[in-house]
View 1: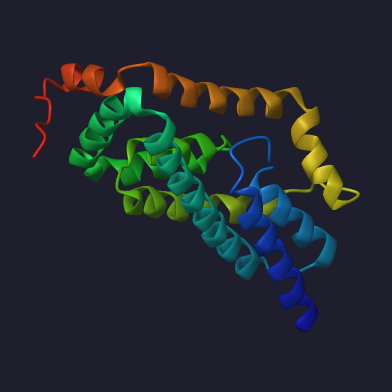
View 2 (view 1 turned 60 degrees about the vertical axis):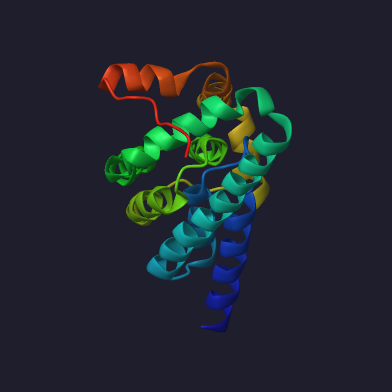
Length: 199
């Protein structure tokens, strides 16, 4: 029991840490699967706890993105704020969209960086993320038969595989496009909604 608690705590600390990094980190479920297979720890405390702490790590990443935008991205601040306003006005869909996205194996770092840059209400993003990742991480950890020789292989695999590298680069590209393109204006034209006036 004590050993299980120690290994779960180690897995959760590592899961929190990797979710602070913007890119080129392994998926949380891969880290959890390593501890599940190697140390035979209980599944649900591991995966539910892993989902919770990964969301908290992503929350810190989103907050760091907000501070970065406010300090260094003055030229795009109005566009990003307008995008955040649009998304907040349609927040009833935000949780569902994040839920569906987070169910996939796609990286979620870009999602939280974008949420931080646009300064959307992060509670909806977190709710969708947690709901999806508890289910997805539990499924992937429970069904995987992939074994790693060591924890270093979990990290190295992220940088070696072409699929993993492609997904990480695509995530960074999506953040760049968020910065470069006028998403709020396009979305409002698409929905025929008026531009939100400043108070």
